[in-house]
Amino acid sequence: MSSHGGGHFLFVFRFNGVKLLVYFLISYIMSIKNQLISPSTEVQQLRRIDITAASIKTLVATPAELVPAPGAGKTVIVDQVEIFLFAGTEVLAESADNLGVEYDDGTGTAIVTAIETTGFIDQAVDQMMVAVPIVLAGTTVLGTNENKNVALINDSGEFTGNASNDATIRVYVKYHVVDTANDYEY
Image: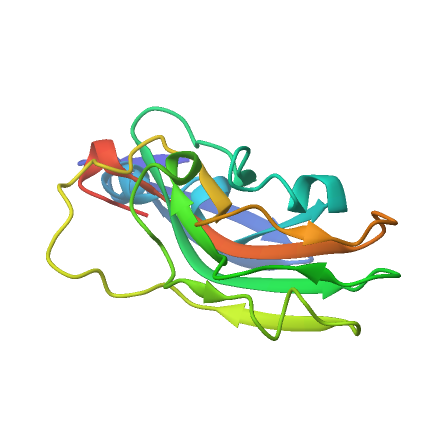
């Protein structure tokens, strides 16, 4: 091994009679190390949440956590929400109730527009719906949603019906996490 100033090293190996030269730039590796991304924030993540009939009927009082708060200095960015209703023996009932996906157990910023439940929650056959994030009107203060969970809420009166309590909702959330403490780097 020989060193060539500036942190560059030349490694010479012999493999089956063939000389292999590997030029390893220590200074280059050091310059990009701060740009490397941890696996937890690098790729889109997927979470599955199953919500029982009893919990469906109490979403106003107790929103269903879809993604936990990621920790200080991080913000969850939701890419897509897929909601599946597995209808029960009897239908669920609603009147002017809509589902929503919001930060901070439903007390924070809305992530998707109101999800109309008429023709969805009140059906006797299985249903599915895909919701994508909205463009927020105006702006949100940088850091407002830092370290906040993401929750499925009901924005009005509680759902009723399904006396057998055998209906369920399954939610898939596709999301990624950004580092709010480091200028929203991935």
